[in-house]
Length: 495
Image 1 (tube, rainbow, N blue to C red):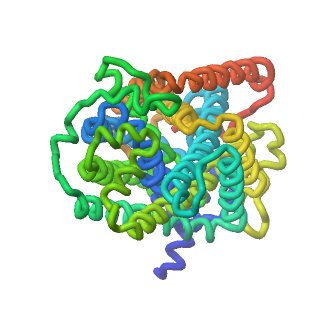
Image 2 (image 1 turned 90 degrees about the horizontal axis):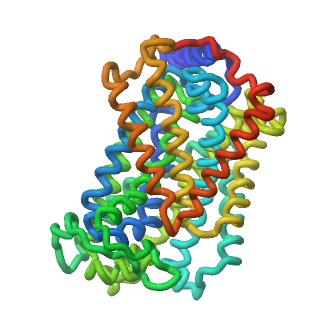
């Protein structure tokens, strides 16, 4: 059998699974297993969240936040990814989490999950592009005489978001090539940065990675990262927001399932592998930053500029090296935002396909030439910009999106925990077997802890954003949507 014939049979099987779930094939199915993995790896992007949120960890308890906190939170993220992957294998659709929750728990839970996931993806796009501006302004800005400012941030974010949407508009082939490149680029540059930092470090003190130092209250003034407190244990928990925010976006492998070949196998693998690879590479890279720092305390006093300060200090006699590294990181952050537009627009398209959002008739439209959900792409981009303009503080945006996304991740997991072995008896080809239930329970518990951490001062406004969001959802559901919204077309599928 030729490769072409094998691909045709595989595509037919994918389309048959999709049809059984109630949907016809509309998007172009051509993403390979690597492309599906790369889209989640690109959104996680350790060179984005790991760099722009580095101070969130360092300014809590110092090196121990990286050496011990990062792998601890990565373990939690991996549990969530594993349980998510099992459900993704059974229901490989673009709606992903929304579709799973609707089938496993009912259309109301599906509707709520969709809005949490969509809001999380839009806010994470805002966090990525605001973080990119902060990083570029602090690292490359001085070289061109530019300083960070609200007006500059607004112009930058609008221009970058529009260009990311444009790449997505003109076809999944182009976006996929860029995302594939992004996957290689992230891992290559992370390795180069790690080796360069170790080579350039004047000292090497491994004990830094297990040393707890209270850096709360730094830097003093309005730029303070964490309010002063005597509780080192509490600070350690707050520092977990660094890996928690960084390791988000792996649901992209599920959202691009309808464009992925052998989605029932490759989508769950993409979810798990992206978290595992990002966790390991990110940990080694950030450990290198901590170990290479001439003075950890001095780095913590820089607050948001901690990462840039360390790299500049290590390579102070080689300015071209720092410019090259910073430019490479900025490119990775840009591609991270581009991949996020891909994921978020597929989520919005899938939800609109079932009539879940205002203007669904327009938002579900797929361009006949490009085979991309063009209206959904531009609505996602525009909504992200509006959120950025209304909430300019990066840390608040990051904590808000982390909470919203992990709630959307865990809702279908919790529903699957209740349905497993009862209404959900037939699993997909990728399965955890008997491990699913205990891992799902741990994922739900961990999400509750993350929610508490994510809404602490100075990010207390995140609590009101999330609570307000929940209030609006409840009001809309009971007033309108529970009578209007029908959910996915095949809720009778009990698998």
